[in-house]
Image 1 (spheres, rainbow, N blue to C red):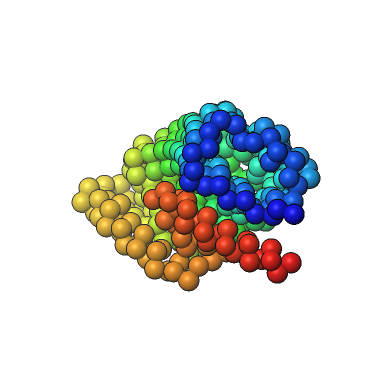
Image 2 (image 1 turned 45 degrees about the vertical axis):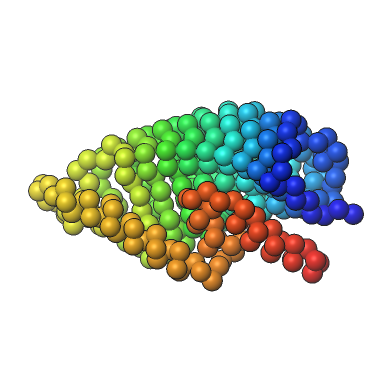
Length: 284
């Protein structure tokens, strides 16, 4: 029975074929880089998919909540489409999901507020959508989270004080939102794995506390030059360190995932993750 299907980088258009709805043997499906406009409308509970890639298509609908029927799903890549509507809240509770990439769409509404305790999520990339509201505190339940990219949205909140509960967090990007002023909590110093923090293009003013040199008890303003150095030079070094540090790879090829999620070359992730999943499936 067919377990893996890769039809990426073709000129498939229209609707995802109906016969795919009935293939409960599939656990790897890659339809990225095509011209598909309508995805699978109804996911059956009989689906055994672990890897689903529909990125770089022309999908213009919302994300069906039936995707949550696929409890075996580990990697969900729907980036670079024109998806609209809200993110189904049930996605936050998928018991196997490790990588969620919905960047470069037109999703709106708020972030799911019900992320499960000790969930398996390692990567959340919702960059460049129209999401609003606040950062849900339930994200602190994702203790395995390593990359969180919520840049280029309309999130309006203070700097999250609960970040210290994410001990594996390496990359945090909240660029170009509507974050308000306030101190950066000293507890962020407990994030010993944090290598890149991007808060640029927000409404942050009078920041104080670590990692800035301005003490929260000091009313003196920090010079623009030092702020520029922190934002530009330190971040450039951070990204270089990430690329080098992740050279050996982590679960699901997080190393190359850095390039995938921020430079936008999902075929790298497809090769890494897909190859590993295929090897694992052959061993079973």
